Length: 174
Image (cartoon, rainbow, N blue to C red; front, side, top):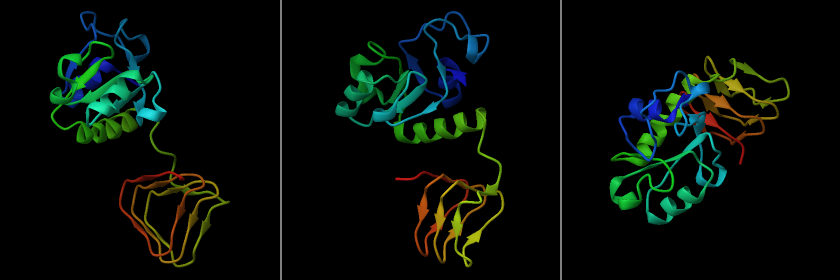
């Protein structure tokens, strides 16, 4: 985890709505009003330690009403509401910045599981699984599947016949 103000600096975003006068000693002991951030989330799955993004006025309103710690949003969408009701990380391209935040927060946490194929996973004989891949419990890799290096296939995920998944991806069920 890192503090919201640290995340803003790393992303090059303009942080509004958080008092950063007292720098946080660490993410676990963040200054009041500068919450620790553990990850990114969709608006519907937001937690008080996650960041969401808003691409338009409707999603911005939903993001502000969500439990998320902060919203990645463009200045045009946020307008005068930036940081008023919820901290906002202003950026030119919120969706791209959201992806960068996801990658950054994943690498600052516990990281991906160790490369392995769970014993309960079903993997077709002709499936190609490159190095450093993690396949979770009850996952299915059908015939002709190709999984790129560094990818994580979550428990219960199904990769259908002939599908190619690139490098360093995270696949979840549903």
